Length: 293
Image (cartoon, rainbow, N blue to C red; front, top):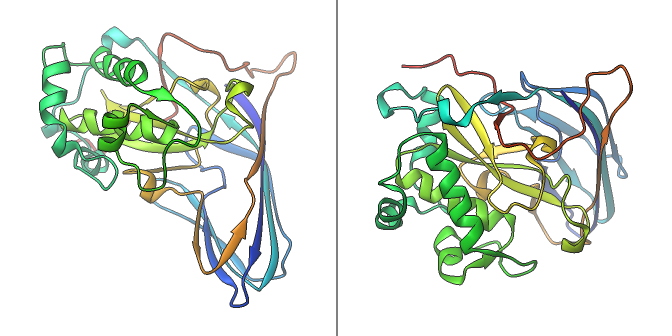
């Protein structure tokens, strides 16, 4: 088990008409991720709600802000239970045996145009034995062929763009890996968290995008950018691609400064909390699927 504490600090300046916000900054509540404590502070005295997506367990903060400054701070302590699997024993799941909840993640989406990458996927990975190791090979290929560089992509950059440009940030690595997996009929989804363990040379602590792939009977973690430590990934949201899990969707005229984020692992003698580290085993923070067809 891993215990992590984190804080997300957001500052905005709203125009004269105010603005509507949908934030995805709360830790998701799942069978494997429990919230020990959490606190939300909003500088404006405005009504707000926190709603949970019943399918992904992502939690969304919704509010309408008044003109002027708006400060939102969320902090939490979270326990994460991880399933450890042996890579050589984890198979790909035949389409006919996929749970209904995974089927949506084998189709093309806005930023992961898997229907355009079938030839590449088959030529590079079609000959490999099916299973965790094949997905690992996809992860390694993306990591090798794309260079991580801050401020090299935009909100419209897709998997195809990244394949051509061969440069990007974590979300671009994730979109390309997802598209290749789906081109091979392997369910893959976009997941957001915080870049625990990232090299400070890459910049301040930030939100992080990684990939979950459905293999065997559950979703396994992959970090194609290789910039952080998967064992320290807090789950905020999951979706088909970045469209579904933006940390802030804003309707209205708003100015902002970059988020200020911190994260740290908690360890204590006599407690079961481990310090996150890189592992060679397969790692999942998802419980086994039960709705298998």
